[in-house]
Amino acid sequence: MKQFDIVGHRKIWYAFSLTIIIAGIICMFVKGFNLGIDFTGGTIIDLQFQKPVQINTVRSIMGSYDLADSQIQLSGVANSATAGSNVMIRTKDLPQKEREAIMVAMQEKLGNYKVLREEKVGAVIGKELVMNAVWATLISWLLIIAYVSYRFEFKFGLAAILALVHDTLVVLSIFSLTQKQIDSSFVAAILTIIGFSVNDTIVIFDRIRENLKLHFRRGGDIEELANRSIYQTLTRSIYTVTTVLVTTIALYFFGGDTTKNFAFALIIGFAFGSYSSIFTATPLWVTFTEYSQRRKEKKKMATEESC
Image 1 (cartoon, rainbow, N blue to C red):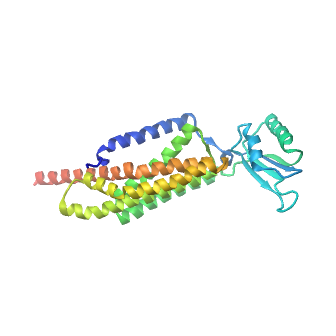
Image 2 (image 1 turned 30 degrees about the horizontal axis):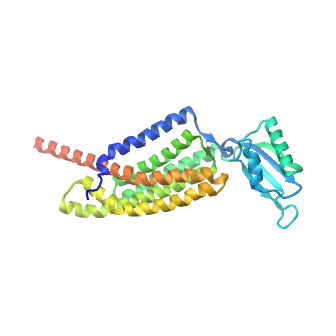
């Protein structure tokens, strides 16, 4: 049975990825991002109730005001009458009337309370920290290029990094399009996605390197070699991405509101990370290799003509 020519249809995969990324970039400029309180600052409300309360009940009350993604913490001395009676809510900046309405709803559903703290706070993640994270990401990409180039060759390193940039831009694009909230956990999700994607890519590149030794002995087409390498590692890639997707989908549906955006980023990142390893990184390596071969042939022909 003839296998589908993945690399031969690479222009389709390039067009698909570019469509998502371009649409996302346009959306980033038009709609921007739905930044969470870690980036924008917000309001802290610290309450002490007369009896213990359930975090799901507090979140349900906040959800009735479209604030279900607020950070809610319960505290109190363990095994005492006050255990779980202290509630700290960190949410977006709220106007006075909305804060008062939430307080009334809390009293009606949870009983009397004492206000320990109610104030506006600044962003946890400042501009300097964001820039440090960006620089750290860029430096890590350069180190990955250096490492992959050392272990394989520069074309492999460049293709791997472009695939990582692809994955990052796709996740950012989808978060902008859907207006999912971005908080500190989003940064952790991006770094996790990068680690997963580059690992899957290197597995395929390692198989390509092994097959290249036979390729030079037997001759043959570079696209056929790349396709053969992809299919030799395809089963592993499918098993790996299926395993992590089952876990992250379970986290999305059963992990609670506080982990939904984190799990959503991982689902998108893992799916497109596996996609980019097969349909972006490997075809890019083929494109770079064929371009390099054409340049060598033109240079050789020019040398022969001059002689």
